[in-house]
Image (cartoon, rainbow, N blue to C red; front, side):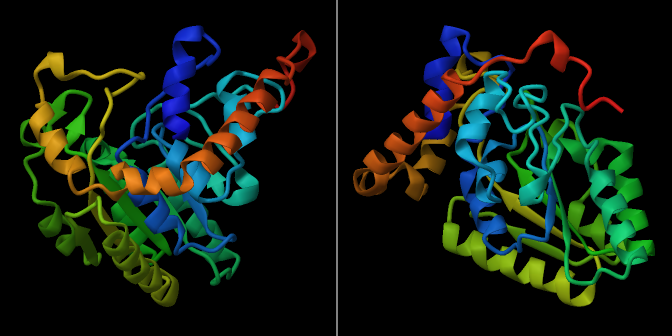
Length: 291
């Protein structure tokens, strides 16, 4: 419903940032973050609204950030693609594919040096990130030094409009076996109970062993790669495969919206008003927070 409000507001030019919507992938964020502690850090990517909220990021600050207001999570300077909420363990996203994977590994290394064994670090990325060199370097380094990193792949099978079969020549399970990194895999990314359960197992392993693990959850992006619209006219996927996935998606069920919808809508409306009533940055703000 938050994303639906963003879609509603977007044509009015109130949102000062491109948006990569999480609609269809919410279950992954909720299931994983429900197993994390406040002290755990998660390094999200540019499709990160769901993770920001699931980890405890505040809704009013989210809308204010998207609108470029001073009261936003990053004082209106980050927008959607660089969303962060460090106080809640949401460490900055990036518009560059795969760029935050090594950040999670670096943070885990720092924690190990400091003998902090009560926290883990989650790197969240899409399947398209697995074609970047830093992905392999990070797997190698994390295993070499036995770092408490959970590599979390939201696998929607797409890199913009390109399917995995046209991008990847490797078998992920075989790759992880070569690095001796445990592989947790779930195809039913629409099932909140199964997502929670497998996330619980993966998080427990990393926390207990203080070693890396890999969790892949199959999911489905409902909207276009970037923006609020649909893109079935492009021809890279069909509306039929989306309809099949939605038929299993409990978040799409009317019963949930009937039970909780009005309360959630009120919370969203209050958040939007907070953002609309917040001032934009001034010229004096331009160079603040620059080091």
